[in-house]
Length: 198
Image 1 (cartoon, rainbow, N blue to C red):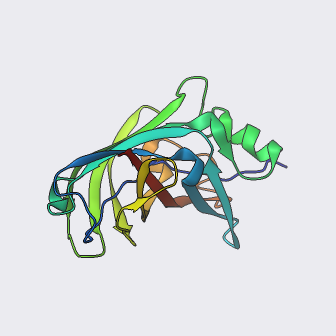
Image 2 (image 1 turned 180 degrees about the vertical axis):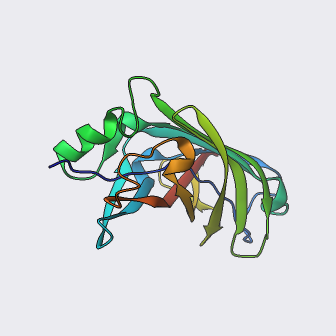
């Protein structure tokens, strides 16, 4: 029996900013701290349960001005071969041509195009997600924005949560969609920590 699941980057991806008294007065560029960030996903299996996974290798940056969140920009690159669901046989299947086809499409990318629906807690970050060589618009809902915090190593950090839902069939990933074995909708969940140097 084949074990399946799926993700979507979106990266992929994800990306944030926030409003606080300690926020910078001008736009700052932050790098994603991969060691304290999770790029995760979940998808239905057989219509009865959710398979949860994540990507282990990615990098990206976010530029934002807490006083002008509408100009926030972000981009992320994900190594799709780093997909992990806790089951080696399933992860190997996800890497082949039925799903991510990592030999032909090693990376997924997200690049923002704008923001909308800005509130004191978050905003919608619009952008383009490229997966399997196909680019489609995606909106990440950013929430739980933090203010800046100084770490003990001379860095300044902040974070947030970003979520989205995509259809994998939009990117040509149709294996077992019609049969209902693996769901078409993939929920993305990103817990992101950002860091800039002081």
